[in-house]
Image 1 (cartoon, helix red, strand yellow):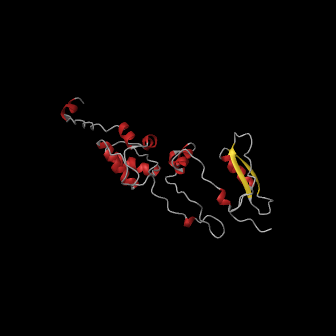
Image 2 (cartoon, helix red, strand yellow):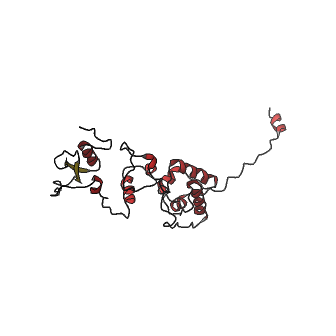
Image 3 (cartoon, helix red, strand yellow):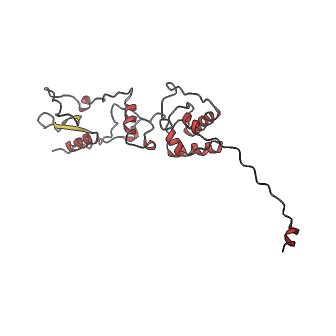
Length: 227
């Protein structure tokens, strides 16, 4: 028998993928099995029985029978972001999502990483995103700092730092520049509050520096007389 292509999967792998996504899998050979193709149905783990198989055998390419899962969000990227947020910390969340109809493959059937498209800038594009303007001096200064560090001129006071592509290193740069500008800010505050408006509302502005202590001259003659 000819060797299986590098991109092939086994029934056991399909079962494992279904279980990791809290689904169950029903797998069977396509037709009489001589083609080497598998048909698989993923269904909720709470279902009593798998769905019925179609009466007619499926034809065409395997990719023709795949579909985009129904989601309640306006885009699959938004659904992925919400799903990942349930199990990943903020600093591990992907900054950008790229939707592909198919992965570019090498002649060996593996993903051609060099042919993958370049991810777009994190967050919404300037054409669709309307940034909320700062309302006070603290917000204006923080917006300026975020624009410099993140390399994005279209940042508003209600934009989420992680949706803009922020990570732990960039957040550290933001807090360092903010402290130099007179806005004491810790990385933990940015991780917790995430937007400039929330950060500015909780930031404690520095108070006036304490007056330097007065230096009094000591009379050395009085000290010698006491010896």
